[in-house]
Image 1 (tube, rainbow, N blue to C red):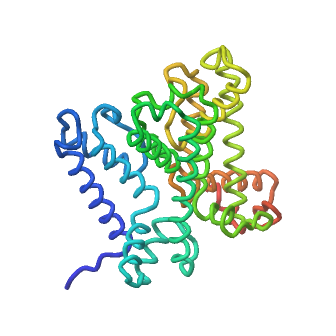
Image 2: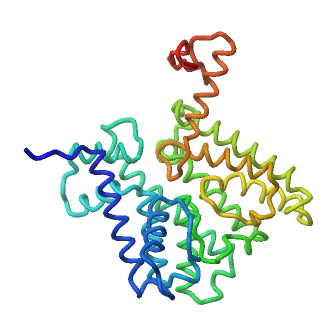
Image 3: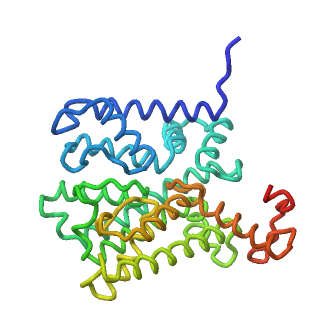
Length: 342
């Protein structure tokens, strides 16, 4: 009797196959400027597909245009979600998206309502392309240095960093992250916005930009926005104070504020505008905590998620006050607090 693969197993196998394809493409001699080991290709492909951003070779110099293009595609697949991409292909071929496939999409994107999966797929693609496109246009205007190598290299440079920022991948084509652009205020602000939007999750982005129910946001969206704002503000203030006479010394007050905001936001991406080696130990410790928390459910980022932290803190606060229910935004969440601490 044949063993049937459940949706979760199919999802894992699908990602493994894409990872393998990316590894083999990067392992090809035509993908790099110098010999590449299978382990280096595998590590890079996995890091790009999972939008982690860790590298064992310098992306800017080790990989050529073909190799960098493979990394770009893997980052986009990782951000969109493999099942979303498969759904797009099925739709383009005129095939019906089966219920089992919809379940995989919902599981892959941490979505809550199975009946709205087709709309979610459409919204994810539309939002991703629009936001990345707007970000790329703004980057092209605000970063003249991108065009020094010519039109096509400039377009690729802009597209690569727009995709990397929105998907929280942290890959760069400079060899030193975004440190050489730290004085380009407009460019840094665009990267900040792209990283933040990508970290919120597609459910939140749907409500903010498509349904535009700003006064009637769901509890999930309100909790995500509140916790994200709290982490960002706390991290920004801490970096500003701890690096005021260090890495931020000599900069204007506005630049200090923007770079502080950048390094609080980049916890979900991995970009830097000031060398990590110059950070103070207290902020490095805080950054570890912020990275551990990570982004929000259904987003491109990892971590234990902002909603998890928010729920735990609210539950603890309710226990301290002797309450049996968690109440936030005038909504009661039924959590069994009698066993929460056991």
